[in-house]
Image (cartoon, rainbow, N blue to C red):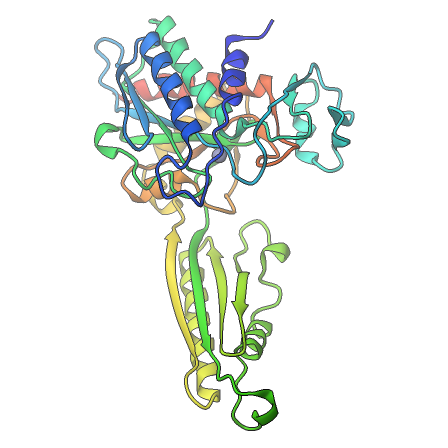
Length: 409
Ligand SMILES: [Zn+2]
């Protein structure tokens, strides 16, 4: 017999909500609106106030405070979409009760989940797991988060003895294509701070992410017939390759980890006449981030000085920033999450995110927003799976966060 939490998760996971970076609309795909509508009905039935699904596919709702409780309003956020990187349907979930740690065959696909390939799963020995049949992703990212939030709210509504302040919910579209914060309806989400429920293994608590920028270097060559090119042809492709080979060779994504930053050449294109290099710049530390941007600008300037005329033009645009800066001035946001986890018997695993989250952008929009675990693993592919016990713990942690916040009144 499946718990209401598991049933809820599977119900959401069966709706295809893959986002589409090629679509200009918001939400980028119709499936996300279908899930949002289903959730709107569910939240209304549960008795939440101000359930609002707007034209951009953002669903918000409010859980009123316990009578007499004037604790600060907080928020819980999860995203509706799944990654466009992998097939999402037809989803055929597999149940692995009380997993012993042995390899898990994924249906008849020939794919397996093994501890060797995914050592992080070690913490789930003995848990009941849900996997795929090896042909789709599971969608625990982030439907586990949605199911946990809805179940936590249901728990609070059914337990009037648990005192809590106002809690706002938001389910957002298109996180996986980097647009989840673009049209976030802050006006109807007056929480003082919020938690995205979008992390991985049990205990994960994240409030530090990369500072991120993208850099484009446009290179102007001079194309001349190769037979008469002597002394006049300038090959933009040659300039591009020479420029890139002079970049720090060990500061790449595949050679860095933990708190190390990098330059990532993710796209290059061109011909003799014109070429382009596109880099992602990542660094956790503000000074390091500035230094990387300055380094690129200096190299472009030095390169130009060696040429017959300036041929390289650099443009850099910031993408997102390390939210740590916006969270650490309010230590209670993290303290409450840690206390909630410890109360649930979970050791908080605070670790930096080598990427960005909607929470980091929301933090810079004035809503400090760390990230909590969902209990899922191996997101964005066929090896995705989720621990049912960890999902239940996530609900317990959310309820405890509500309880601890109420003590701030
Ligand atoms: Zn996610």
